[in-house]
Image 1: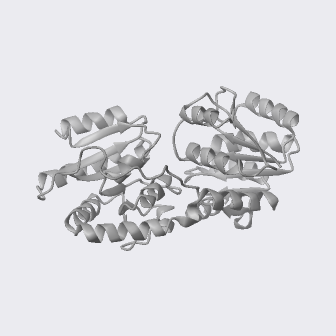
Image 2: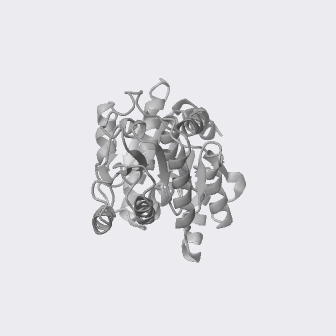
Image 3: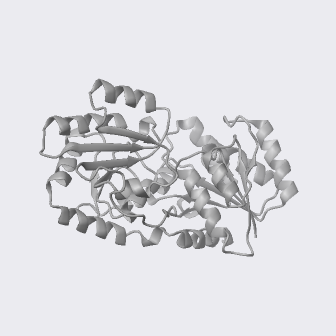
Amino acid sequence: MRIIRVVPFLDFGGLERRVFLTAIGFQKYSDLELEIFVLGSQGKTSGELFRLGIHPKHFNSKIRIPNLKLIYILYRQFRLFQPDVVHTSSAEANFHGLIAAWLAGVPVRIGEEIGFPNHDWKWRIIFRKVYSLATKVIAISEAVKNRIVKLKEVKADKVEVVYNPVFIKEKKGRRTLGYSDAFVFVTTCRLVPVKNLDTLIAVFNDLVQDELGEELKLWIIGEGTERAKLEKLVNESRLNGKVVFWGFQENIRPYLEAADAFVLPSFSEGFSISLVEAMLCGLPCIVTNQGGPSEIIEDQSTGFLINPNDPRQIKNTMQHLIQISSQDRIQMGNQAKQATSKYSIENHVKRLLEVYST
């Protein structure tokens, strides 16, 4: 089976992580041949794939919809490679890739919705036409499926839910970063507005001002367009040293294992690989109730679901985790860890191959 994955970029983020882990999973199948087409330029994940012996093809194109030249380029490439499957991910890749694959006569054309589209009526019509060219549409959670069906962009019987794969490197030991005397909250994400990190910093500031009898730290791992704004907010709130920006980290496990709790108050999440990575490390998690996390977390058992628009609830939940016993936190973390088995790379690849085969 010849498979081409089409993505807009290969820098860092949930989509890039998913493509990287899928590529690892496919290497165990000798009868699968994978090519990765990147509409834009090289990024961090491009380098990781090169080290695996996988060489993504970058087109360095402008990916803004529509780009007729890009559709033609992809059409020519599909005609040249003659894949059995073209699997596109994200709006830009879906638009250009599905049209090109249909024109090239690719037998299996898979579009993948990775988030919560907020389309007006014109874009709904456009993507209804685009998804009509797909043989199947993948949603990364039931919440995402419900969203695109509600928008009438695709019919429910055409959508398959395939949860993201999650994997992090083997355990290296807890408390390796020199913060053993502090209670550490950690978040790992792209630093973009939808992650609601300005609210998280404001809530954390309130907790610090309340003097709860604990030295508190907030670690933010990731890069993005909001970093300078968030660093300014931290400086203005006099939280320097208490809020630490670690930037992008290829191996996040040491940071997760040195923390006490994970928190992610996004306005929406299609799935959240970061959440499952934290659960794999046995962390109790506080996460948005908007979207995919509500399918991952069992509220009050494997973590806590919060309303991202309610700072008081976020604060109260963080305060609750600080004040309960360490044994209770460990128990919740262990329950979270046990709930992650279905997100293995092996299960993800098997599910993908089921969708490709239909």
